[in-house]
Length: 491
Image (cartoon, rainbow, N blue to C red):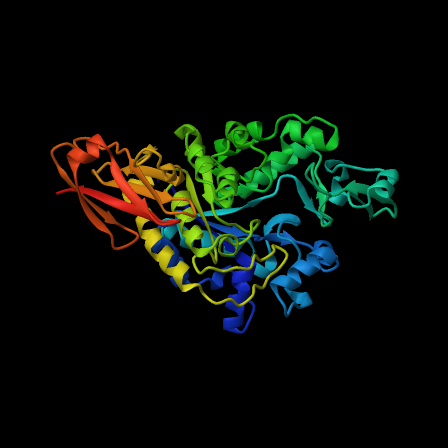
């Protein structure tokens, strides 16, 4: 298994809508062309995350089509928005069976086999915190949900809903939410203080583990005892630390990635997750300051190896809309040459600028950004090198090029070393000014040799005296947001 794998996230329903338009009929998972899967495999992706494959219901769809704030967002994404474009959130799940419109469980099984034939693994969603409004448990097991009173609903209509039951009465339920925002009105909150709820959700996760190779767990920190108690005033027993070993006993090697915020990454990893979102690095890159970014990499590899590094995903704004082109490239070099799981998003390589809500099944037509497409066409082969996928990573020390040279503080630099002797130096001037520094190199036997530095991301090639490298380091002079990814060889 690769130490530092790469993941590619696909917006399944939007992709199938595009395929269906070309086919002249509704497309299912079976219609995904082998050529597209071959292309993903050629780019050395280890994981393919198919977003929003599970069954959703009409109640969630109705809510999605009526919320004024959501409709404004959808209209901004699709100026020609039609009602049929809004099918409801893929996270308002009514059952963990593959949506009938996507071809059902059998089509997913066939897709998984096709991925496996190409050396790729399948990741799907697991939403532990809530269900859709019309989930079957509302009738069969209403005790699985957080109940409310009519007074709760009158006082907080944004957090509670009244739902009719088959007996002709009505019951009040809480919307799913986190402690800092109003509820999601297309969902119901699961009650993790009820042992029955935990057993039921453990069963769902175990069953999902038989259909895929891993799951991305939506807002995974919301069911932690401390967080749940802060939100709902009741303290559940731990869930993740008990269910993850249970699932792995039945499906060895099953992978779990936590969507997590509020600096709870290490907490989730100790709960048993394989990976946790690295939102902190993303936020620091957005702030455009190199020192906090560099300091982020002082953490031990026991932690960094388990972080999922990204520049965009379905929840975040598009990277091409967030960063200018030159900053985008610099941030990508830092992000994806870091240790951990490299997490890419469909449309990122083409420079798409409009985020597509998980409520929509159609995306806008956008022109490809040729500069970014060319950039990623160079980046991905460099990331596919054995030294970067399975080698040893090290944060390098950058020092002033001369007394009073403050621009050194804008640099972030790494080294990668592979088992076959491959050596790489990655250096980025993450600043809006030209900068200079010396980078201390960790490579042995520098003295008495001549080394060639060949940039994998450009045309630069330099020969440097090993004695000078050993005594002072590698001198760099880079423009604002400039970078090098050097392959280093002895001549």
